[in-house]
Length: 368
Ligand code: NAD
Image (cartoon, rainbow, N blue to C red):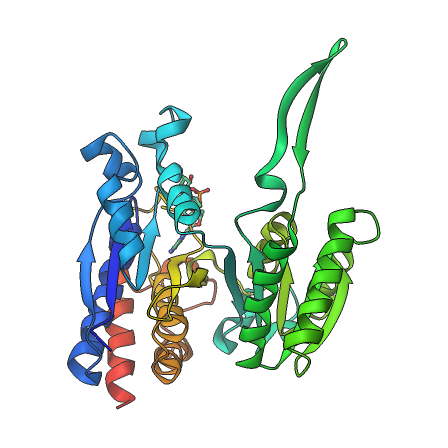
């Protein structure tokens, strides 16, 4: 197969700082593991607006459609807060997700042992936690029509529509079952079939896809509100959770916080397979551009680095190398290295963004 291609879009605020550490790790894989990538760089968000007057230039969009995977830092910042909605930095990100048709958003909630004290839950509830939330990303109530605010008599009415087709449900269900097969082989599907017709259809279609194609995977169903409670009570009961856009938005944020800092959380958004069999893919940390610490060398690069580990696993079929990178991160944390967002313990001096990168590269070297 030809050299895999990566488009790097560092974005704004801490995006370029954390992405610089990822670039060093990409170089390490080329030098030490013979895993070369054809890397190109471009602008997104505020930085693209500054240069082109749009948060995503058409040429960048076209490039994103061609490469094997896109790695994105973060977009936004106070400088752009008063821009028209149509050119806000976030529109660049939304355009990428929409035009690449990235329908499955993967949000792992993984608790590294060394950080178990950071969770708001008891240590034994979260230590060793490793779950994956698959959120449908391109349909549902955020996109359904009719929508808007209308006038009815003397008052205004706000309207949004939850709408899912069978094929939209089936394709995200397949993503969840495929993932489960590579993990602990369990999927829990969450909806509100007790009060929503779209939930009844969701449950039916997930069950049909399971029976027809994935009966080897253990499937359970849960109402999304009960799921939220179970995530706080005993999250380790789950392996893969699949749910719609709205419930996924809430449940994935709740699950993420089980594990501590925003600076630790990666994500992947995947679409349909391309001609070479790889899915359309965008990898990005969950956090934003953190303008409060941008340019100070304080940002934690781990979320962005773990997003690259997800790219190794889900775009490039390099599960062993993804394991190696995750183990290097775990080792560095176990050694007590902390960026400022991970402090809290007595006697620990924070390391800078690039020192965290140095430490992870050191652990990668040691793994050889
Ligand atoms: P944020 O995620 O940028 O920051 C929230 C808090 O977490 C801040 O105190 C920040 O310092 C801290 N933080 C975040 N990432 C960190 C890291 N890697 N290391 C250390 N600390 C980290 O969210 P916000 O403050 O609500 O938003 C700031 C800007 O980012 C806004 O313009 C917002 O629209 C944008 N945003 C972008 C994305 C994205 O690009 N996907 C996501 C969320 C917010």
